[in-house]
Length: 246
Ligand code: ADP
Ligand code: AMP
Image (cartoon, rainbow, N blue to C red; front, side, top):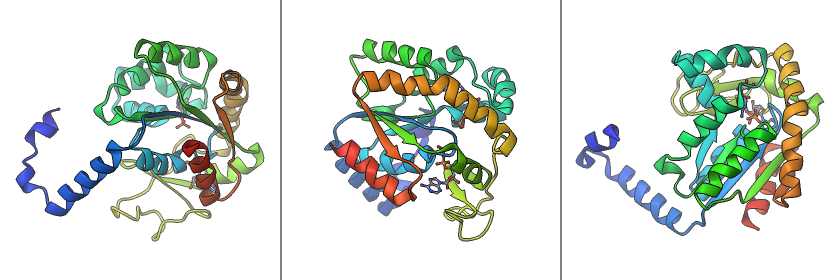
């Protein structure tokens, strides 16, 4: 709140004001959407999210990003989450549910949201349903990024991230113009501490044991769409667009 009240609009360049107006105009005609992205680590959820976010004017809520920010800031929540995250295990349901409950209230979520990496257990999915029911809302679509485990090690160990924007690169599949540097800001890219072959094993175990039942949960509700996440990024985007526009 404080930041918006201190911005003097006279200081904002006209081109930025015009772009923001055009964006809001475009967004005013978009239907509300609430979308969940489910898939193992490296399946491409974070790569597709900004595209869906811009197309439908949604907020992007990635529990992993929020938890990493809490760990970096050493908040009480971050201190509780760190040990499980380092080992590639899931953090407690209560902790992530409270993060999501708070995050969904942001003004940028007024047209709906993309949940990336949440829910990851059936308990989280049930709690999400309860939260939405209170608001008279419901999930529209669940996109299942279906992919073979064998592809994921190369994707995960080659991933580079620009932490402040969430932009994702890959040494082989989506290299930045200059190695180790963000294309837009020129700032350094980082590799996640848990993006190693060893931690990936635990993360995949958590996915198969705890998150796969969530896919069934939404399949039974008739809102699940299966994607071919092993295809090149542009093909996956085309599949996402087809599902979300139907
Ligand atoms: P997730 O958010 O599901 O963990 P990411 O979107 O971060 O996955 O993708 C993991 C890595 O794989 C990133 O380095 C990204 O650039 C790359 N990647 C994403 N989608 C594809 C794809 N369809 N084909 C090849 N590489 C991809
Ligand atoms: P991600 O960025 O989605 O790969 O998540 C990184 C780590 O954060 C996971 O390995 C978990 O330890 C934790 N995490 C993220 N989202 C959740 C969730 N919904 N439930 C439990 N743990 C989560």
